[in-house]
Image (tube, rainbow, N blue to C red; front, side, top):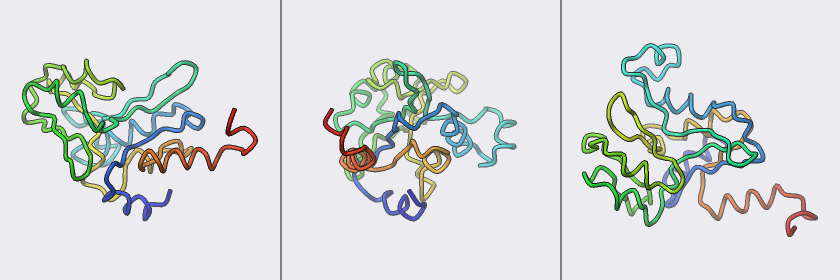
Length: 175
């Protein structure tokens, strides 16, 4: 997906980052680009020297025999928002995003425990939770742009399903 196409998607309701497990090779480029994007310097060589270290908001791990890049799914009825006792997590009903106010986070980790996707991470150094924020300061998504295999896709669930279907050979679609 081109950078221009990603820019257009930023204003679409229900955008999520999806991972095509057929393409993910576990290189962790998404994790590195996410941490750099959330660093003070926005530069990989300077970011590794920052104190505190910038934190990634995505993780790559094995699920069964496949590798997958896990992101916040910005659930419509987000259990993390309900579980958050400090009000640090909320829904932006206009965009569909699940927002995190780190200033309100008390580090109780309830959101980490309840997330059905394991997509909320602990920042133990700062005693707060961190999660995908859909790169609000960018016109595109750092992880999607950094993915060398094109495994990451920014779009709606319907668009992702269509993309997968279009890329699947017709003779194997209904197996």
